[in-house]
Image (cartoon, rainbow, N blue to C red):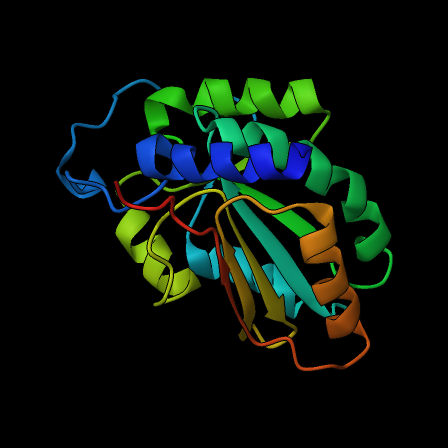
Length: 193
């Protein structure tokens, strides 16, 4: 029952605020002039994918989230709990905030509240479109979004929308076992009325 409510709520959130392409591109939005807060490291998709290519890595899992996204606030702590299990086997997990620069403080505080890694990685100001294209041409831009890359930086699986441990853990185990896990999983949209 909880899973059904979670999926329905997440699908609604994806349509209401956690998903979709932006109407006004970040590059056209005014950027704050204040210095970025401590604990934030703006990154590009290339910066993130470099983590997959480090010696000894078997790949990389990347979760894109935002402090304002309700389904992200449920998903990130779950992923953090399972992160150590996979990182010890050469498959680390990196979290990247899609927050606007004016909300970087919120992202940092959220990571602190979760006991997550700092500095918080965040999509560099003005580059969300480039970040999306660099992560996957098939990513529609909905968040949360989770990506599995192999050690060469090749995308092996994309989960767009909220996921549960029982959805992602078997794919990660199969990937580590050398199985083909290529594909995409998307949260189903609620039926049209």
